[in-house]
Image (tube, rainbow, N blue to C red; front, side, top):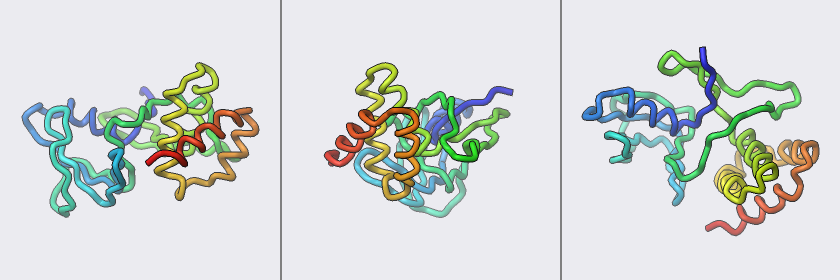
Length: 170
């Protein structure tokens, strides 16, 4: 069985393509980050490949992702996790979807993976993605833990640049 690393929004995209194109799909999301702000306990409705409504209703949903964060496309959340950035190498959360095992990347794993790719490829895009995650999730992240991995992986320059970008983002 394939193992994939995806964000909650990728689950949205797969759900949209898995159903008939004319049937709306409603998702219960614990949090939605849309580039403008954060919405808690929100139900996005997907029609075709577009999010068409955001509601706070408690009615029936097609998929319950209430313990996940949905990020509709504004941060590239595609990462190849080659490391588990925990002292005990705890793997990412795993769930089943459409007969596939999915590893859900945690924000700290994504930040570190983005910093690694930024250094490896001299990629400004990866650095901006890490900064966006930091600016939105910083209150939920163990920054000391991330900084210990930054030191171990020699990502100090990328970390400082990402923090500067995060602090200057609106």
